[in-house]
Image 1 (cartoon, rainbow, N blue to C red):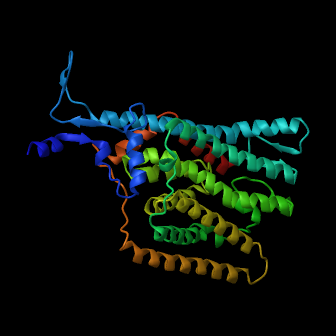
Image 2: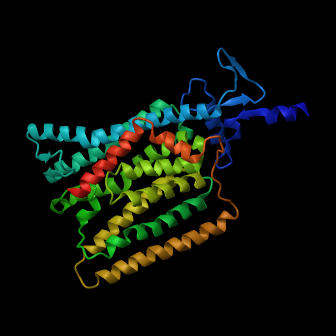
Image 3: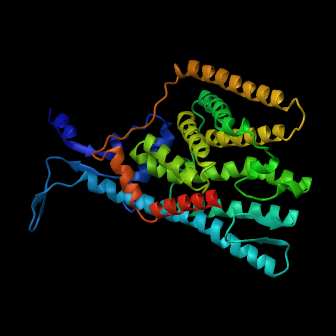
Length: 385
């Protein structure tokens, strides 16, 4: 009897977290990381509700779970804010300074602070784009892993516990890829291959085949890998202490605003959300990577089809889009059948703070809020220019 009463009076947020969505090895590592005494990013709150602390001038005061949660949220978003700040500073400022320096020493490449376009020789532009896009993601990724100090086994989910979830996530990506491109696919505007690289604003029409293929492979395969390690790695794991839904929405929002382009924000938000959900239900970050690769490959394919100037182009495009949608629905049916054996579950944390309060805590934390505002302002400027 005394044991039951004691358990009911003990609040332990680490033990109350739902770990059933992952395997036991991951769960044990996650608990161990959260229980480290020197870990300022861990929401580690334990209290016996019968105990109170006496403070001079205030009397008996109970320890507050809300204050502990606010403190950890602020620390996490402060660090994620600096990581994303590194991203946009390198992309919008340092990369341009590097290009100015290269131009100064005689290399055929140039740009301007008033535009994101990079011009010059085919080889030079292709190389600098690969370097810039690698560094702008790799630096923040390394910074987050260094600050959070997470074991590899929890910073990157690597166990494919439910392969059917991989099929489901890819199938959802098929359908959403078609849906997100419907407005542009059936518009009256002429589309070119350059539109696939719209976020880079470079004239790929003058590129040699070698540079075009190299950058396409990099953009379709390499970028999704390193970007998902950034989004779905340490940042996501730190945020999921407050529930998977909260972590997915914040991660997807961050991925969307970092595009600094209103044309891509909705699609990136949705695809990142699907990737996060697929990662959680399958148990592997490979699912999130696969979803983003599928999305990139679909975009590239549809644009290449639309470069065909023959009368058969609309028929070929519509057949391709229909085939993708049908494949997506078949995959989702397969996934639905298998979810009866592996029910979908997302980890929840029902704390004293509401979901809205956690979002408010994130929006007022510097520099995370500042970076979001800067990205939106850049998107507005890009839309007006």
